[in-house]
Amino acid sequence: MTFDLATASNHLASTSQEWWRSAVIYQVYPRSFSDSNGDGIGDLPGITARLDSLATLGIDAVWLSPFMRSPQKDAGYDVSDYKDVDPLFGNLADFDAMVARAHELGLRILVDLVPNHTSDQHRWFQDALIEIEGSAERDFYHFKDGRGLNGELPPNNWLSLFGGPAWTRITNPDGTAGQWYLHLFDSSQPDLNWANPKVQEAFEDILKFWLDRGVDGFRVDQPHAMAKAEGLPDHPDVERAGAGFIEGEASPPMWFQEEVHPIFRKWRKILDSYDGDRAMCGEAYVLPLTFMAKWVRPDEFNQTFNFRFLNSDWNAKTLFDNINESFEAFDGVGAPSTWVLNNHDVLRHASRFGGLNIKPTDSDGVGPNDPQPDRELGLRRARGATLMMLALPGSSYLYQGEELGLPEHTTLAPEFRQDPTFARTNGARVGRDGCRVPLPWEAGVGAANGFNQTGKSWLPQPDIYAEYSRDQQDGVEGSTLELYKHALKVRKELALGEGSFEWVNEFVGEKVLGFRNGDILVVHNFGHAPIELPAGQIIASSLHQMTNGHPLVADQTVWLRLVVA
Ligand code: BGC
Image (cartoon, rainbow, N blue to C red; front, side, top):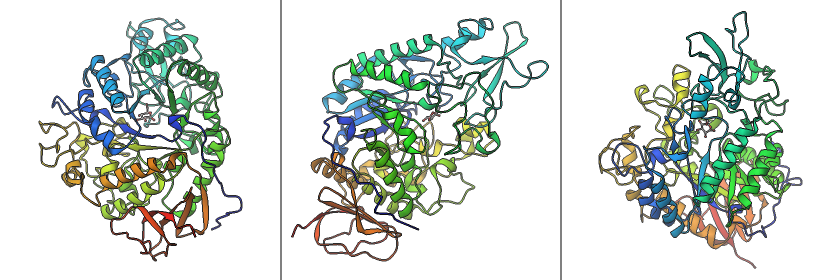
């Protein structure tokens, strides 16, 4: 195992003022955040009512997962009207009220834009179904004739990311079997044809609709999927790559096509034509990061999610390499690196680090029949990981509930599962519901601990969630919530997000990682043996009992202001 410090990355403090370069952005998953009307599904008024608690937490911006009109086949990532709020979540007036309140509190709002696919209930798709082959309506999507004697075989070998083929055959209005349409995700999520200028225009209009309503930007879903290789050729390596790609090998025909870049440049121009500093973050799943960096060139996305960091095993060598790769790639194009440990698609880090060596990418959830993570170990490591992340310069993403140290719901019974992955794989992949369970706010208030007053909940909470409720942690020294609050406060005071980065040689090795951000030394202990620290003032510690002069124990992260001789 080599830690090559000679070629490792340094990063200079940022001189740019743009908020998104160092922002802490908190992801709200609307259906599980807070439910004002008691129907068991969170809503926009519920979010508005609880925005104060996010301001108190100390974040800068909120990214909301989709709340637009949708049949909810993929929890809102199947949009049937991009310019309206789904009645489940409220209406446009509720949205405006939420934005106004957020801005009053100094919080920015980013909304999720889902451009790769619509819902099959979207008017565009419904029109395409009733129109004839080759019509302008069909050209909004990828409709193709099937292969085989009677078109009974899918047009190519592409697979859906949620399991099964990426094609579904339609039935013509006269009852005969028709063409096939492409869906890289669920069959209820037909892929749009981004080579069609009308699709491009429609989305420019959608961007303006939300910008006019005052949003500060967008999180863009699956942007790397939007353009497809001309002619939709077979995936060259479905056997090995499945629905995905193999890093370092030629890109498959449905991912990372160059044609997407002019589209994002146009979008960026639109954002920049508005006042304020509007920003867009792409969920560009493009690796290695030197490839991803192309997506954050100065005239494209402002940010992309750092999936390399998210997918890191929690060990010193992997993190050392991944952090180096991050700074090298993003600094190379003048973009901030982002850092993220959780979102609504991956196993919560308090469970992921619970001793089972689960990678977010290959876990696909943990079910009641799987080995169960160690909760205590997981939380201890998760706290250490977060404290390390929040000291890294750049922008950090948090996912609702991680500030409570919430574990994944790993014992959710099959009858509650709603993620399409579960059904499409006959339960072989349990899917992502376990990280999407409604938040516990007040222990014992209804069966869902204050998520609402009725106790209804679209996914039931496990019993253990009561002890993680926000009211059980608020103001309680040593709680995970207080750790997050403290770290975010200090991060802001010391401008760590805009700060510099360099490894500290004596704290780089198999069992330890340490770096400096300005005059703050950040060290994490990956081993069991206590680590002696230099003299300094403890500014933050992931474990409660840390006091000056004590060695760093297993899984602990500390921020230390060095004593200048
Ligand atoms: C979202 C997922 C969603 C998928 C399809 C993503 O990457 O984060 O939740 O299922 O795109 O829209």
